[in-house]
Length: 153
Image 1 (tube, rainbow, N blue to C red):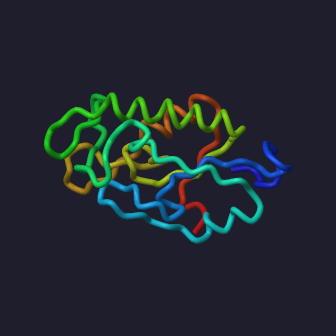
Image 2: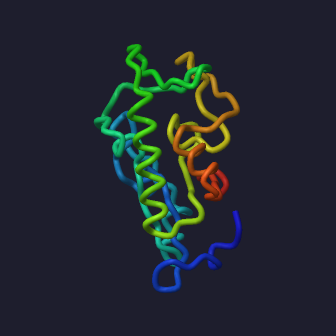
Image 3: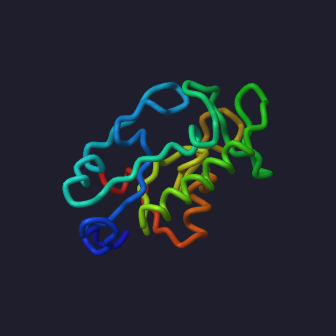
């Protein structure tokens, strides 16, 4: 990710799309958050734009965990196909990024929506595999630079 002070969308501050759970919003599948203090502190120099693509796609919190399958569908642990909700959430997150002039995003690693480098392999066995979540992939394809929270620890 490039230096943070370079982008400018509002009031001279760079605008960065951020997974809302990293900012302390309890929106994860388990109804919790996973705040990352280093990311939160970026608010001093940047406009942080929180999104939860899964909520934007219409999924409740808490919700049954979902994983991206090898064929690209997103199923929850009960076997329900949530692909459409994940695609909708990804599109809405991209719209929000564009509305705020975000050219970069910091996303929650391992998430079926936001994973930047790794996601769970679809077997619900806790096994991680290289890959991107649905939102991360769409943002990347749309030219938005991505980083995971682990790159800020």
